[in-house]
Amino acid sequence: MAKKVMLIGAGGVAGVAAAKMCQNPQVFGELLIASRTESRCRAIKADIESRTWFAAKGIFTKISTAQIDAMDVGKLTALIRSFAPDLVMNIALPYQDLAIMDACLAAGVSYLDTANYEPPEEAHFEYSWQWAYREKFEQAGLVAILGCGFDPGVTQVFSAFAQKHYFDTIETLDILDCNGGDHGYPFATNFNPEINIREVAAKGSYWVADPSDDKPEVPVETRKAFDKGYWVETAPMAIKREYVFDQVGKKDMYLLHHEELESLGCNLKGIKRIRFFMTFGQSYLTHLKCLENVGLTRIDPIDFKGQKIVPIEFLKALLPDPASLGPRTKGKTNIGCIFHGEKGGKPVDYYVYNVCDHESCYAEVGSQAISYTTGVPAMIGAKLFLEGKWTAKGVHTCEEFDPDPFMAELNVQGLPWQETFNPVAVP
Ligand code: NDP
Image (cartoon, rainbow, N blue to C red; front, top):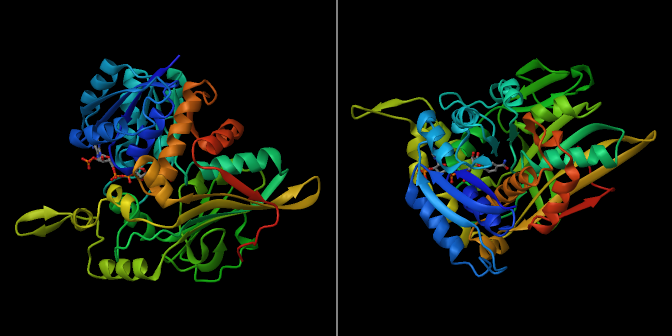
């Protein structure tokens, strides 16, 4: 029977998730899009309803919209109760995660998001804040699926799939996120500028089980114990590699801290090292350095003509809205995971990745590939929950569920994956 979903947020990713839900009306019977600015929810609804695929199967998702500030837990709880959805999807910003989880607990509804909690006043994200809700969700008999985008999200599904089918033990994992797209602007971000800049301006870090195995190539700033291993922290963008990506070509990529490293360090058996690399062009890096140098990426409030302003919020207002990049962006993304480990005593190397074309995404749902590669997995996570396939009670990251139905959905919902057992390793 078709189910009801409430989607919070009306940006680039929410627009894709909503469109993909409406492509699966047999599961998503009713959709409420609620966000801070209701006109953006209405614009998403109008765009979806104008698409040729909408209602093409003779059934369609009934869409309604609402205004909500998700930080207001009381009002949000009342809205959830009045719509009575089977699932609340948080595709607003990471700042809202805890408020929406509180409202879900109060209203007795399960939860899904695409990015882990980050306090607005501190450029720092980690799972501890949301993992603290585990018992509450378990006791309420509810499910919270965390970080169900591409990275985090699909990268953890890929990891669970590799572990289930190809490895006894995975020793090393490198996650490679390549965007070979060009939007023609000297500087713009492909998802929320504030969250994106906070992420890439942060110190680089990777996770190792045993620091004595690690031969750092750049000065290590800190080594902090975490779970069964250690975080090794370096200056931002200090570790660089060149890699040739299928269907994109040669790119420079830089080691970043990323949220899935934290849960995968806990959940992959025998893992010794996990790193995350993202590609950046020289123009992006030069602009970012300049913005940092002049103080425009600061997250603390400053006085300006008797008013308090947060420089990064002001910068966000100047930059192009990521949702507007769709018609301008050409090229492809290639995001995947390279594993090394062993099975039956023999060494195994395995690379699984998806290639996604910006222009095809725009033709299908009016978005660029970064929003697409995040919104499609969010819809798949919701679909598997509603179909009773991802239903373990409590708070979970994506590698904790059965990867097989998710991998099958990726192939039919627009993000087909490819695999090779002979990848070029990242040095
Ligand atoms: P956008 O900035 O385009 O959209 C964010 C939306 O959230 C806007 O519609 C905004 O409202 C709304 N919003 C913000 N604050 C509130 C609030 N207090 N109450 C209600 N609504 C609010 O972001 P993106 O679509 O680019 O990204 C969405 C999420 O996806 C982010 O959390 C991002 O970190 C995550 N992401 C995850 C990825 C992954 O692979 N896992 C990759 C890319 C993004 P308004 O319109 O009024 O501004």
